[in-house]
Image (cartoon, rainbow, N blue to C red):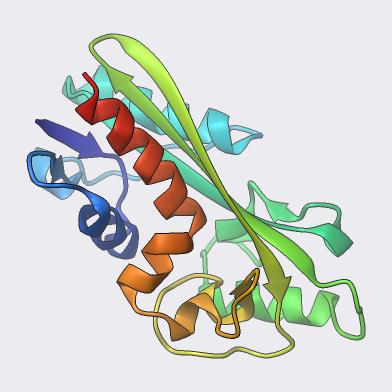
Length: 191
């Protein structure tokens, strides 16, 4: 089976490919000739994921899945949430995003947070939605050099390391995206 993953983020693409079993080939946007930025104007993770998947289906004709992920911090009333990638501005700078969060949480003892991923699948004209959540907390400083995005400041529940201190396979085994992708894979192989 070949299916498009609607992302221009090479880190997400590598993470997803590492979680896919043999027999499911993931095509990147580059491989199908899609070089434009796909709109993400929804007010929920689910809406953005479906918007991206439908964009590929309508403009390129491929069955497709897309994800949107948000970091939801309890003390910030769920922010940055759907705006996680551009929390500190439209340039989507991970360092600036982390700095903004660390500054907003300075002195706050409530550092509870969760990562949530919504994966929208358009396959054979039908919609499916898969969700993955991992709870944890925001550290007081960056720790680790691996991963991407907010990984250096997010510690999953029952872990002494940030996502940025884990290998890709360690992170994938417990992450929000890994949990959502396993649901997607179970669905695809059950067909």
